[in-house]
Image 1 (cartoon, rainbow, N blue to C red):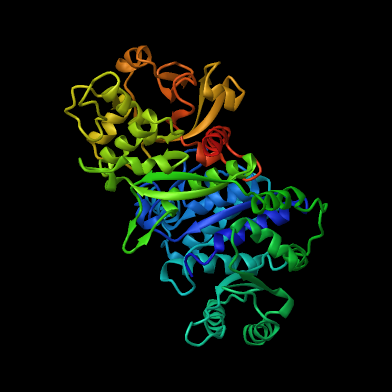
Image 2: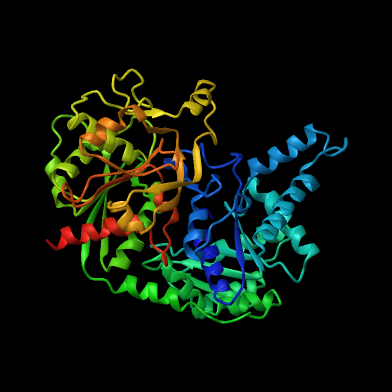
Length: 534
């Protein structure tokens, strides 16, 4: 079912197979009719992850990159929308030479062609394909059918792994295997038999349940992998290897390890993560938290993970608090509650909701020497706050929210105005990796230790060039710019003014990995750690 852990299972298997010497490329299949994830609401769908290419995709792509320490391509993300759009465009251009175009075989052929193309581009030994959704969903049947045909044509080279949930009803207190049996039966009706079952549950499976699943689902007992709930997702590869999942997968695929370097570096990371003691309090002030009675942190998944990686590297444990920026709007807000935090992050976002609350939070962090890291919108709002409260431009604002402002310190890029006028929003932002030049003697340069960087973007609005001279004269430092010098990529305050106050126009969280934390997050956490000790 959705959310049970298919993405983490796929990422973990990829990490394990890499440790055995194989080049692995993961593919995420989303059954949505959206062409990409760019126009999806983060509150409903979770984070939109951006690749170097500019492809906006599902947050599982971020998990793949983090676990496997790789950069993925656009070909590694497939949606129903992409597939149908390509087939329809091809039909409109007589690509099928007048044939009657049907779901089978034309849609399924397009799916398998994309899988094979991704493997070819990545020059991979093994391709991992995650089919999103729940077994029985109408919208993913064609993807399962395509996978069935792929195995039919390549019986020695394709295997199926089912990730299934085994509930333990609280009033019964017994683990139930029937949902898994029904899932396998549904798969069988599609012509698919799983070779392996990853059994997700609150606790580890006992031998009796493994035997029951084995007999009823026609899967060898040794190929039923127990995946109980654990404290951290990064322990999953270690747990999987206790059941020798890598060896079993290679046996089914008729492969032998190229080497067995194992996962010593990954184990070291997990050990370091579990043995930190000093705790730091970090607030994340966002707006995509409202989902009924629950708090949704998935909208900021990469930010959360990036904080963790840098904390573990520095040797501290993060205690994260979610601040809904809407709660900080109005005149009677008690901002002194922010003083308990060792650091504050304002992540990316769009629109006017909660914007004044964020600006108040940023002002408090700036004026009370609380380490601050602003990401994308978080940098833009920091510039607005500085223009208002230091330069005295009381109505300074982004034209995204207030087009009539007399001080548009944040404005839309000229080449985007046409898209907005035509109401074209999908895939029309500054997307993907762009180079930037870093100024020496700044927080940014000290963190990167490089004069040139490449970071991923997802936005339409920029710091208005007409205000840069005034902002710099007032003390704000633009420590990284585009090679042309026109676009401001990092804004910060010097150490003599503030221990750490920095915002990025890009999204550094997209390039933070467990074994290679992002240098800006690490610099922020070091400042947070110092404040905590004081």
